[in-house]
Length: 182
Image (cartoon, rainbow, N blue to C red; front, side, top):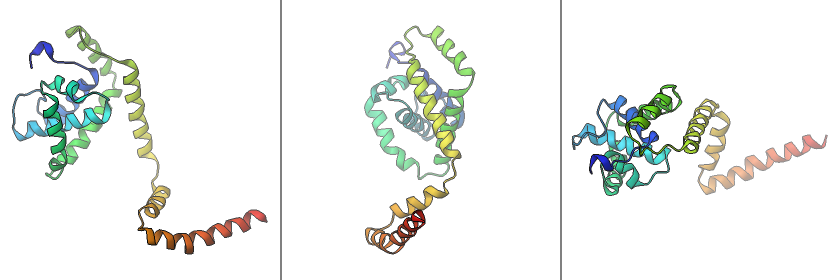
């Protein structure tokens, strides 16, 4: 894809920077070496999870077509089986969340605006992503103890769920009803 046809977007730029920091590889490098394919797969996965951009739009950023993005996303699960891949992917997410909140983001927006007149910056989308990240951070801080119990019950086999409902839940419910009456 020609340089002048590449599509730029602030979200994709931040994700690309985060992935490049973690992997130490430029995402736009035209190579099929394993480290480059890994960093691109992380970038594509981030772009799909944190933006509503089409595969063509994401591919336009890296100079690839939508079929290449689809292939990389399909290979993502296989890549997760390799040592350290998941750790680095999580680091990419962490770095992206840091970058999206950092004061340098405003400088980056200005830098991109000056370097490319066709840049698309959608303030509302940026706010939505920022709020999603803030929500993720808050949710991560909530203790999981009460949810773990409920989740365990949900994951029981149907026969065990019936047994739990009959022998554990109903007596507990009756006990609660007697307490309310008094």
